[in-house]
Figure 1: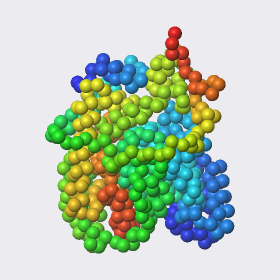
Figure 2: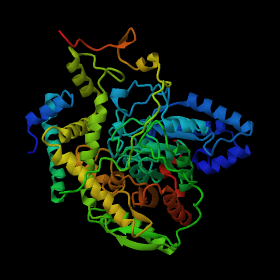
Figure 3: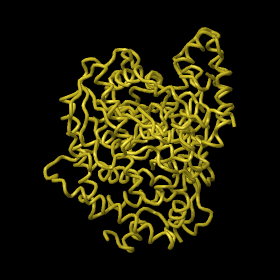
Length: 95
Length: 492
């Protein structure tokens, strides 16, 4: 077992996913099967090999620091679950 | 042949000559769509009002003698992870069930300028994560072939099934690890995954940003060339789109393959591949030899590590990209939350399906403190080796010929409880995404159960014209692309 129940709980917390108690055993089992399969990468020696983050040779993209057309406030808020006075509303953060 | 069953380029000829109207064509496609949709379920949202409006505009342009492009008046299906301004875009997820984009994706903007007609948003695996289109919050799509009880492949299964069932003329999909090519192969249509950076990703809902690419699914190779032509090119809104000239993709479709060197990677013909698949792909390869191509055996030695490498990288990127679904700015928010963190956790738990959660968990774990080097960095190093494998192979040949998948379409439900088995469907498509290459799938046979078999052609970066030339030569010499799913021929 690469991942214990406690670790699964910890990763779920990091990922902001509330797991139902009945989901956990099956999920832990599936994650462990997949991670075990991924272990085969250890057969490949990769010492000194540059990691590839991106296949294209990318450079910085610059533009003039000028005002351009962008989404209006109404459009930007149109899909929000809750808004007030042109702001996004979230549940209470501080007591 | 009915209008809906015709190809894009044949319809274009009739539209330009005034033999048919775009509106009549759109009505014919909508009629066909409604006749088969209960059995196929290719769409999440059908948009007949917009389609009729666009068709009328196309007809007005034809009447003025204006022809913006071969796409003018052509009804298309758009995968539901590509944003159309004002049209619900769900990514087949509960968490975006009510999302209406306030802008067009760049490909959509280009297709609007080209005069195309959008008939609907096609079904898919949730957030493009899957190989069967069963991971959709709106129910699975059925493969139009066989007994309608097999999966269409995924994740662009709705787009592929819509093309195969004549419920559109052509479609857009997206391909992160095979999501255009696999469903194209499993439903007997043509699917093209362009070079990473060939087509703008602006307005494509992100899954794995270093791998995602939009591409066409069509009834034949020429149609794929026409649709790619309309969407390819640099976009200032996507800094990863390549500033590389776009050639005429239709120019070389009749040039044949005489004198070309085509590589056959030995690692793509291994144990585990179904016999009918191997036979069909091998006879397709022999056909190229008879058409005058020279065959060379090549080696892609890291192929067997593709699935493990991909599911580390793609899931890591996904866990980061999907962090944005927090119930604040868009999407569905949980009804019961006591405080902010509780709201995040419940919203995401209720909004995401099982496969998306599994992948977010794996990606989060692979990126978490203490495991980064063992998983993410290791997989990025493997990615370098995949690129080198292909670079080496392309010193010996112009393009590669390979199977798309080791099996034909599997039964609905068969692999749902075994994620690893599901992932293995992508073993021959994933390496192409890791290396950022263009590749095309086209039909090369059928199994005894009347399920399609796909041939994959892979080319060096930005050589889509080569892919299309090679595929067109095969298509011209065979009849596979002319077959239609028999069960859907009756008007039931």
